[in-house]
Image: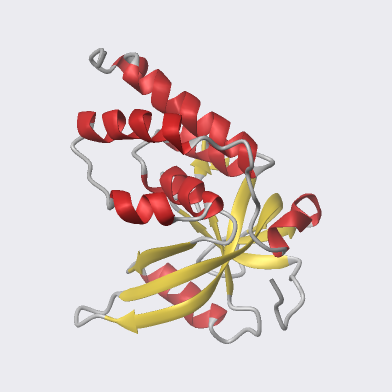
Length: 208
C-alpha cells in the first residue's frame, strides 16, 4: 500500500467509544459536533488527510488507535458531515496536545505497526467450516443478519476485520481485537469472544 505522504508525528484524534478501525478496512462516520467539524475542516487542508480513530479509556484515551485517511465526505441538510475513513496504520499514542485546537491532537508513534502499510495479511490456518457455524449461532442469538454468500467469498482479512469492527462486542473487547499483532491472533481472539458469548459470557442468558 503506497501513499504519497509521510506519516506525520501529530494527527487529529477522534475519540469514539465502541468504534475501531482495522488495518486496510474502511469505516463510515457521522461528524456533527462543532469541534469535530472543525477537525474535519482542518484535516482536509493537510496533504495526509489523516484522522486518528481512538477509544476513550478511563479518564484518557486508549494506548493504541488507528489512523484513517478521509477518502469521501458529504454534507447533510442539517449540517452534519458523512465521512469515510480508509485505514492507513495503527499507532501508539505518545501524548495529547491540549489547548491548541478545540479537538485533541495526538503525538503518535507508528514504529510498531509497519506491517499495516503493506498488503493484506493471509491466514492459512483459518477454518471457515468451524468458524461459520459459531458465527451463525451468535448472529441468530443477537438478531443479526449478514450476506452469507458474500462472507463465504470474502478474503480472510476482510472477513475477520469486518467482523471485529461490526459485531456488538464490548469496547474493551474491540480494543483487544485492534491491538492483536497479527490476523491469526485477531481471528483466534474473535473466535474466543464468540464462543464466550455463546456460553453465557458477559452475563448473557446461556445460549447453548
